Image 1 (cartoon, rainbow, N blue to C red):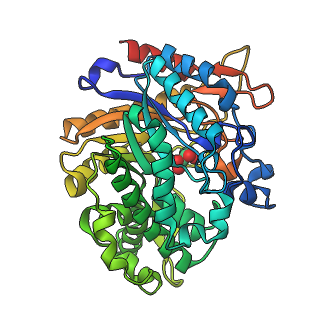
Image 2 (image 1 turned 60 degrees about the vertical axis):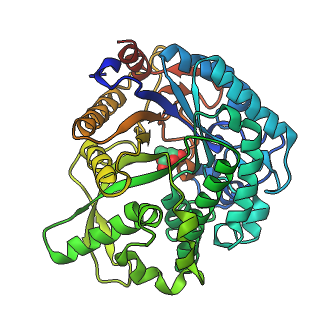
Length: 439
Ligand code: FCB
């Protein structure tokens, strides 16, 4: 890596991130069925119909994984709790699931890893999906009850908590594009899901404040929207993409409104009384997390709203086909502070790349990952120099894992996982990061 720990401000947090369904092994420990299980079981949705039944078997192997984190010199671990493990039917607590997260958090603390929890990283209990899931006006109440249950058990040991990972994915990607569970392509469902996600976020923050928890934030994902050319039509198209992808949720929380470009499509579909929900939605936050991977080149087209399409970009790409564009991270960190969050601490809560990593003679030479991470750390440093209050960076991901609709093929880990034997092999990037953190 081209950086060292001492290049960053005192107290800057270096961490790695994962999520429950992607690593734990969902078939163990009394967890209930989720909409990801049924989405994955439906032919055509997920590569090879793979699911999270076993994943990395982190449920049984977390001690080994945390030992590797500690040895690398990490300060913090961003993980998620699975609603369906904590409450298999979405409502009734599962003592086995609560005990698991209790053990997990203690195992982090024993190794000096600060727990950064996310309450929802996409696996909705099936019974709640049956009742409409994110389309349901009751979602925020169900989510508040789950929040109270899990944080009533582990909240005393949290360094930080965010309710929902990447609202855009929960809303647009899953209800408009249909790429993730529940796989809908419906604008009314999308508008409602995106609004209900924010109500659930606000309810969870309120609930946790009521429990006396501190350091509560939100985690959002961002893609820089670059107009394909200088035309007004291209600018408008990029503005719309920026609106529903990057601005919708921050506008809701920080400005009590939604972007005009998005309202053109959403207005008839939002639930009655949506304008009255912004007090709940806009609960003050102690930090904001940005997940950042790439940019998109946006071109106009003539179809109905939302009228745009993605054009191919010229930059080098990762195994996901995503352009490598570190400057986007700099732009989002500085823009978020300038236009929304001011002095509130920012974290990069996810950043990383998928790479076609292979083990040769026991070694994974992922020079691409080391270069990618170095370039993005440089962007973070530039953002800090420009005045953005960035307090930490979490690499996605600690382990190769279940990459949702793309199954086990896309390897994002610092640590290689052999999905037949479950053997862990730290990659060259792990060793490079370890020496950067020691310096
Ligand atoms: C993010 C998700 C994470 C992982 C990475 C590659 O959108 O939060 O679970 O899939 O992308």
